[in-house]
Image (tube, rainbow over all chains, first blue to last red; front, top):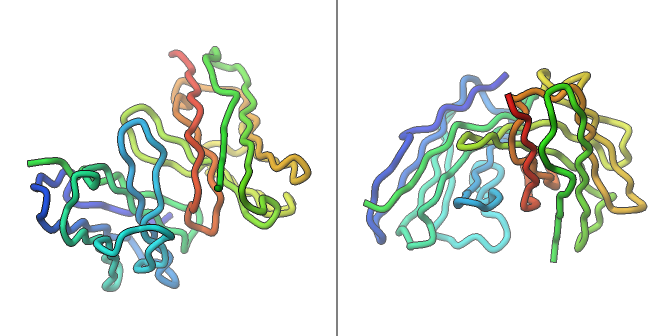
Length: 108
Length: 116
């Protein structure tokens, strides 16, 4: 099973700042099969990024994903008020599909 | 507009059973793998089970094999999860989602509560 470790657990930032979220895989994720989701309280997760760096339909271009080996990064270039939420990474290159434990982006 | 609407959650005693349903609309249901993903209160996301477009291939997380059964009815654009021998640790919001490996569209979830 591929274990995904997200860091930091909580990120305290102000609107307009840049957010950098990390997701480290315990082993290689084949074909860059890594996705990112945003979840707000009381809501279902929303797909942001798939294939490590492809934005899902309707996702603003301030969200971007990248990878370097087993390290994956979600970057929010300038935080908008609606971006404060919990973010999860998920790998789909191996079975079972697994999620990271989440990073909460909160208002500083 | 893609819509996934779960139903069937509720309070069930340990050892009991529950059948969740997910009604899909706004996309070609029969063309997608479908999955169930759950989230325990205050916790992260956990994949539960997935089913292929024609229903002939299914996969489950190990801890739920033999207790949970995923199925679908493409004529009714519906996905199901039969849950047996429920335990307190199965308490969670259960989401259905269309799958391409990643989970593209999600329902709003249905809460299953199994008291300890």
